[in-house]
Image (cartoon, rainbow, N blue to C red):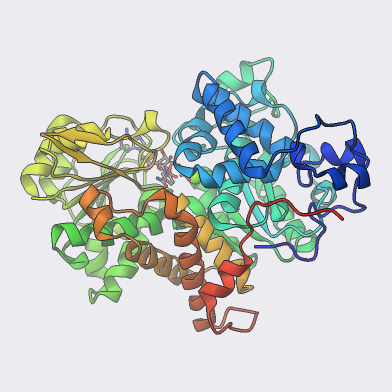
Length: 554
Ligand SMILES: NC(=O)C1=CN([C@@H]2O[C@H](COP(=O)(O)OP(=O)(O)OC[C@H]3O[C@@H](n4cnc5c(N)ncnc54)[C@H](OP(=O)(O)O)[C@@H]3O)[C@@H](O)[C@H]2O)C=CC1
Ligand SMILES: CC(=O)C(=O)O
Ligand SMILES: [Mg+2]
């Protein structure tokens, strides 16, 4: 989306000379023309030869590739972002398959772990307990008045890496880069926020260079008061913003979503975005298995935000396909840290989000035993527990199904429940495999399989774009179902032939635009849109998408 009302960086007046070159939203580096160099006081500040954006991009790509490892490439890209935003987004957008694993999973996981030491220039807002009572004032310190897209974390469950406290900032920063690169939301609209209420990560508390509050995580009334103040402040300071809850621990994530979804334009990416990407992949997989959605038996490893979010959206999709709610829920089975989730399980009472999926069944302790009990058509890993899909389990899935669906969705790569190679090797290449973080293609018996990336990046940029484009008053579950169906519809026969149930990442802007259109269409249907319905929603949305290109300065 364009920020038509703003100057290019949303800040006035227009800077000149050295100040212009150090403004990432306006800087063109060696691309400033002769005329601009004279008019803007730049003469002598740049080497004489001028380059095009395309040439700058190729040079930057070469420089990035020369960096010795992924983290160095991440640092290179972050530095570029703070120097020349247009070039950064051009580079990302035109090389998305190569750059997404650098600015996003898996490298962003490593970057978060080391965020304290690689922290160069501030990006986004840190709101800590010290700012309690002054949150609106902190939001106003952000230099841009018209924020439309906020991604916020409190750092408690960063990917599958656990509590990283203030280091979690890498996640909102990365997700918002993808809003721009994958869905054309103008960078000036985007605001990353980390709420710091402490951390229970002992290693961080012992680290003398830890950048966050050096105290245990605050819970209960004090946490709730800060979050309530935060929500009210967002509504006051940024009334047009859509807020994405990201990587909260599940004791807060579910209730923050429920408490706020009707009161603040917001959604939870881990619960709802992940659900849509998984259901989209599952729907596409039916074209390979020849089965119906209503024939599926899903066994999840992990019954948290991602797992039960997928179960809820599956329930909605299966009901739409004709099942009763009870029968739809009966298709979803969960193994958590205590074994199979069943009614009357001895021990700790089941958390609220698990109850709708706790079926009548004798207790079962392990995933392998659960596979025997459930005989699943699909095994979905959302546990953050690496290599838990063992050879025995994957081989058994291959015996039970001609084309077993095996989704190892936990991030980053080090947390995946199995590798692509494991899934293909142990099923003689029959598995329909997807993973949260990318895996390289695998060749088995002369056939090369290209695994798809089952990651909510296929969903959240399009959902956000669609909701903003139509001025949605609320983001509903039906919008996520529409997003899932649209995603599945973008999977071509060529994708399926390659072995993936997701479209190529190179098409992500088009996919996001189509998802945005489906979301906006749904908003109009549900009477939740506040802008008039354009004759061609998709064309209207595409016209609003930001393209990284330099503006001409007169
Ligand atoms: N691909 C994608 O787009 C996405 C992937 N994810 C990934 O999914 C993972 C989980 O995220 P989320 O659902 O938000 O996290 P939660 O903390 O909400 O849930 C984790 C679940 O895993 C269970 N679990 C933990 N250890 C084990 C174990 N040893 N055996 C069985 N189950 C176990 C937990 O059990 P218990 O309930 O008993 O504690 C819990 O139910 C993360 O790695 C995350 O990166 C998340 C969002 C999007
Ligand atoms: C992808 C994502 O949102 C996660 O792993 O938490
Ligand atoms: Mg997440």
